[in-house]
Length: 333
Image 1 (cartoon, rainbow, N blue to C red):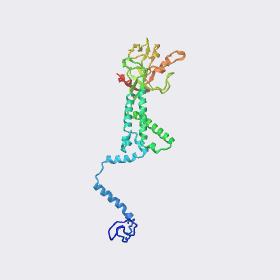
Image 2 (image 1 turned 120 degrees about the vertical axis):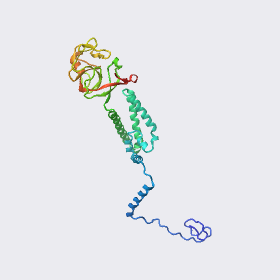
Image 3 (image 1 turned 60 degrees about the horizontal axis):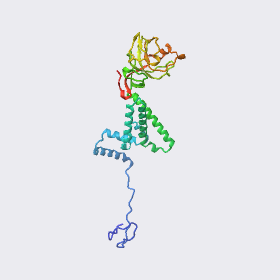
Image 4 (image 1 turned 45 degrees about the horizontal axis):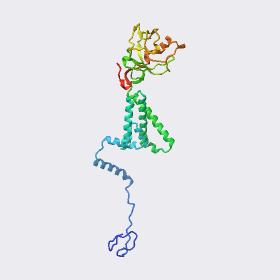
């Protein structure tokens, strides 16, 4: 309170000035509730503010507005997990990428190693570690911090892991549609192929005939005493439709003419046979290594026919590249 006589400032509530002792006059009461704008004028005020903002502020680019919308969406932990399908995307939209930049770098390294070593146990381990790290990046955005119950946390980890694993399984089949892979049990010196190699396969439809010597992936409905129905394997085309395949002196013969054993090796389980097998129309004689047991240890023509005669519709694709091991990686001639 200001003294009228000496203009000194006094503490509120004093009755006399501490300097001159004059009686202080009470200050006027201030109204803390000023009059407000009528409700019907509020919409017009908002319109006027928008118009002034458009005139004074430059229009922001569409990318900036889209980023702002995504940033607001990513601020929710659950939506952040969805956006983390691309590792680090939710963090980047919220300017928190520094929190996971090392994790994203390690994820990229593991995934690259997994692709390079694909077809080997090391490749599958690297891909599995990449999936685990991807799950951690998605959960690190904030979902686990919002969940206090241990059981709910375990459930959330299980759901995210299952979803991302399914994504890793589906994406290659969509991106690389028409391609597959498979192991071969054959050793073919002329093609530099050895048992246990992982081959890349290009799928085929009804493109027949297939050349002799081609390595193919086939998915038969079943074998006779060999493999369970639905098992895929890689074998070599020996006999074409309408030909007769026989064996003599551990060499395949087509219509009595011998084939080069370096290019068309005879599997071990067939080397003791010499009976000719006729290849039906729309089928192929496909050679591969099996563990075949006949009745009483006798390998009959029926067993050979049921094992080696593969209908053309059951051949899924042609092998075009050795992928594993890397030391012999290259295209097949």
